[in-house]
Image (tube, rainbow, N blue to C red):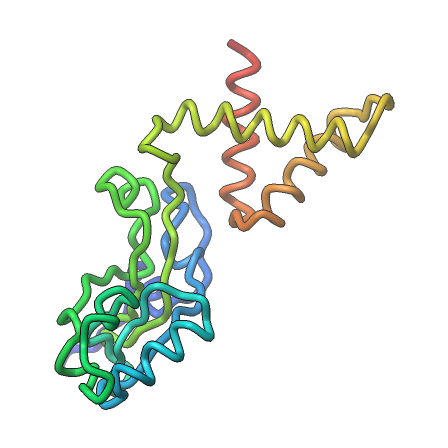
Length: 195
């Protein structure tokens, strides 16, 4: 008899919260994605995509991502055709335990995230710079944006270091970064200012 005790990757695979230095993890960025059933018609799919102002929907059967459809592709199919007959089969998926830097290095900008049983949790957007700009350039641009926001927030008054860091951290989190990712960004900012 074998008594399985899931480890950290299994825990993360179910989309449960994690902490640590290895991230940020894709599971921290999962958001809802438009889903459609395989028996929906092309006309129904186009209407749902238009209502959601989305270009892509995931076709789901029994909670599993079995395909994907794009608005542009549906426009070329007959209104009464089923999505099952026109969808792109089995889109690539990742588990929540994948790290964002690994996926960014592979060139991914959007991934579907599934639990260990293959059930769709949602999608995650991987932040990459426009035109594939290097991480250092993106960091510099983001830092410039943050500093401008701080100038607007504090005006002529110079905040103390803790107040300034708290403002920057709050701003990063409000813009969608995970709290530990915001902390790493600030640490990188600190190490850059020491050079």
